[in-house]
Length: 365
Image (cartoon, rainbow, N blue to C red; front, side, top):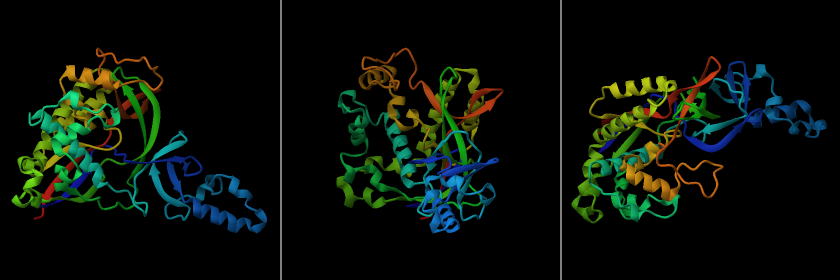
């Protein structure tokens, strides 16, 4: 079975490369626009203008100081692409793009989010009973025994082999689908942390990709894989994803009721909860900022089991805490959310959660 998939962004989406862009080296702010620089073109032009007598003295200057503000415009050879918005922060986390510099949605990002959805469904439906004693001692790999229990004992016998999601078509750079996004961590009492500025794709951006379900892996010829008892997880993917996301949205609404400053975020989640979706459509949260509740099944465990995991892996440990630090089960976990921030009357207020998308599937054959 092959599906055409349309992914529409409801809130800003950041999927990072791990690379950080630096002011005046990688980007320059002019007026209310941020330009990402073509460093090679700027340096080559500076060399041509200076001539060999300059002996490379201009190479000690950042590229942003070698190009005039008027030379930064759409279509300029000194510009790679534009970002809507500005920032006073000197570092910006880069959004993933293809080799030609065009943003796209990696199929792995969508598939990883759906893997967590199906793991959550297995737990909530009673198909799988989690065993805390089976978890790995290393926090980074703690959940692998649980994943093997749900999806299969090794990559060759993993259920998700039957689900293939292609990278999306790349987006054009004009008009720019990218924006500068100021994100901050907000604790349950509404207090903001330090700002983190990222390149992000704007709401209403639309991606197109394909999803393929390999039905041969459910046939008698592939009986040894033992996928047949979970076939409906993939054939009924939209319904299962709607069910899990609806429950997550309800839990998120509970958390955001903790402080009056979250009213705008609560309104956003209220609209998600009221959305009327077709049988082949569902909501999903992906990418950077989705947080522990979107990327872990620990969210669905009984409270006693969650407390056990918090103590065992010292979850929620502050960066500067000492070796003797222990979690306090009386405090909620996770104790914070990563949100877009806005300024209002000299206050920093939470605005949007990140990474919420509408996924629509249309069967081709």
